Length: 255
Length: 326
Image 1: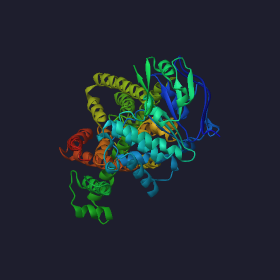
Image 2 (image 1 turned 30 degrees about the vertical axis):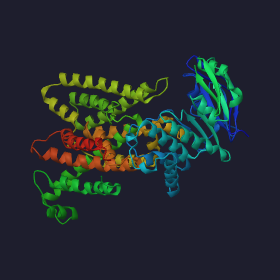
Image 3 (image 1 turned 180 degrees about the vertical axis):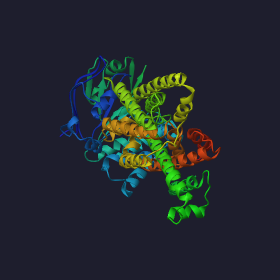
């Protein structure tokens, strides 16, 4: 059974049609790149697939069950989402922030245990911030804050991860390290990632499958290497795209 | 920086100290021995009457009001995700003030004033909630703007009534507006609401941590945000309405106590909510005692004292935090 599925999914914002009757199946073990121009509906699609927004048509199924019939806490144990931006209005330590990812694993009257603390510390270590556990999140740089948010998602330990521009604000080294960390999770049984990315080359390097959003609400999806070429990318982004073959594989550049 | 256990210990210690200060201070100052004899029942004369009948009820209601305001402040700051939010920001005190001043203007008794303040705060609460909900999407910005505008409207009505009121009622009106703990007849009520509110809020504190980081974050981690948002709003409104009914609008406590504690390291709501009740309550007991004793027999508005006590402490902590200490 597919872990996550969109059936004739239609998304609108106001009168604008973003996605028209998208039917796609996301299986365990896959890393999906979602590519599209600004305003093409990537974030809206991701939030709908995460069950945080109602579909304007069609349905989203999580493990074969309609998303709106999945209890919220069960959904949060199975599926985690990294938002494009998480504001921090109030001071909190890195450790407290990452520990909050453990929330769905506890009932109303329960509290975190040593296990949760260990998971949170491990998640901070995985993103290279083990030494700053006690620091206030507000004192971090944009890139460090991004890594804290990823650590919070890792602490949630949900097999399905939906990430909205995970490499925002990250330098090249951390982009690679973070995508390697996240995408390696799909080697575990039942794990699946969907990543909204703007860098076609990072997508080609780390993702097995791709979902392209076009301006007219149409979509293309399949094995990433099969669907990507310079002409389809030109349609997606509305600018000329050049393909270069190198020893690192195919590379795409605007030009 | 003090440790978390140290902070809690200091806050728990502050409560009896503030009460001792309140009970011993006044027209007849009592020393520690006399106070102890009164409290143990060994002394039954004038000191006992002073302490048990006058000072204790007033201290209890000061503690309740301070705790209610600080707790409501924490809840509303989390709900609106706005550090500038205080219990009065959504017009609850404005509604209470309009109704209370109208009662004063009509020359009704003090029981009527409290009653109308309570009804006025409920009216404002329903008005703001109804208007901000509307048909469109609920956002905290919309709730905030509706509340601020309703509060401004109430402020205009209050100014109008002050301008129209005869000299004789003017000073009691001003006193009500600045906060007055002298009119209290039933301190037990405030304390009951405070304890009930705290017991109701603390189990949700872990969820409040998520909510303070964003509605979306709470939703993604499996919370029913619509239910949560109504719950926080209604609870915070009831706490504020109770405080305003008991003592008028005492500023500053609800805004600054939560921030003060966050700066001291109490950032998790599971610690912040009880800490805020302890600190807010003690702060108001001390401020009220000073308000009635510094220029005795004249009584100062307690709101002036809370600000005079809290502003320097807060600014000091903020300056230290800016240097990166916490």
